[in-house]
Image (cartoon, rainbow, N blue to C red; front, side, top):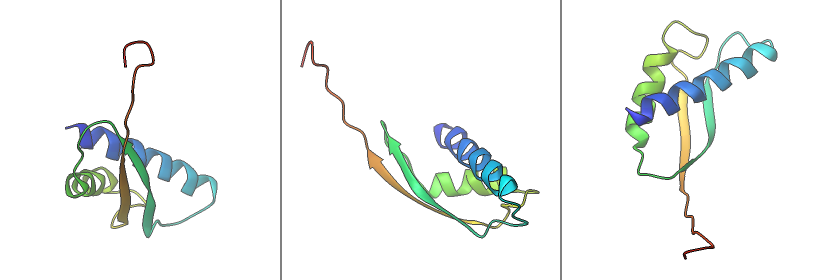
Length: 77
């Protein structure tokens, strides 16, 4: 369910910006998500669509690219 919380957060940001810009509907959402664990684009799209039902983003295409985040501890390598 990690994808569900990410999809919900993306939707929240989209709705905030769309509302602030006076939009009456959202057609597509494009962006990049930095991931620290494997995410599924299909699962993100499914959860985004579910969360978007009844909002101005209902039916919007979710077009996210996933970027893997790599980290290294300077202290222990």
